[in-house]
Amino acid sequence: MSRSRSGFYSTIEYIGPRPQKPKRQNFFGGWVIVAIAVGMGFWFGRPLIPFLKAAQVGASTEQATILISSLEQSKDFGSKLAAAALFHSSDPVTYDPSYYKIAYPNGDVPATKGVAADVIIRCYRKLGIDLQAEVHEDMAEHFRLYPQLWGASAPDTNIDHRRVANLQRFFERKGQSITPSRNGMEYRPGDIVVWSLANAEKHIGIIVPGPGDRASEAWVVDNMGAGVKWENVLFDYNIERHFRYPAESGE
Image 1 (cartoon, rainbow, N blue to C red):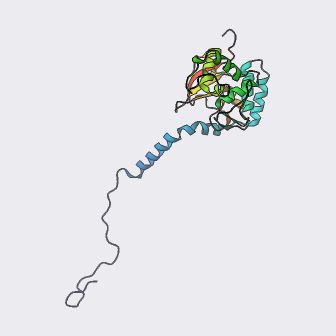
Image 2 (cartoon, rainbow, N blue to C red):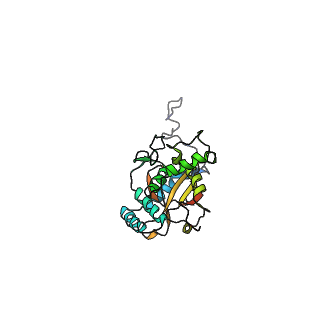
Image 3 (cartoon, rainbow, N blue to C red):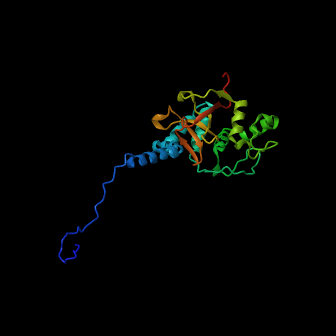
């Protein structure tokens, strides 16, 4: 309370929190911040969507074993290649694009390491086709017809077959090219697909059937960076080329 000059209490002083002026409600509120956060999360999280989809669906070892047995009984080369790819999908492989000095022919980087192209090389080798040698022989004779992207002046048996762009050119020259489609029924087990990714890199994989009651679907065995996987990602990226190798007679 305040005291007057006369010594008597003449006024009553308010004791308590200081009155606050009511705040104007912000029209944009917190929902705008939430919307921005969700949008940013979607934009930066898009590359993870294929991996999350594959993880949600899943495919068991038992399903792979049954499918491999069925494919191996076929006389069709593509089915046998798909079986080799499914068998390889259980191998522990760490993604490693490093340059290795390897033997020639039938040379390979350490079995626990590799990139997308190594999936192709290893699966064809299981069927007696050495793409290291076949790519090198074609490059040795027609070097300038292959992509000139790495500053090389001559073929290199250590690395040429491990580059997706070189495999793509080899399949264009020696295999059967098929017009890319969004129709999964046009992809057969053992077909080779080359994708162009958002970062301008190329990726490659082998078509295989899906697991269990999804065997009619076109799935993929590839190595995108997390090891060799059997996953449902065929249409998650831009399909650049579609091949069969060896080309089927009459087609």
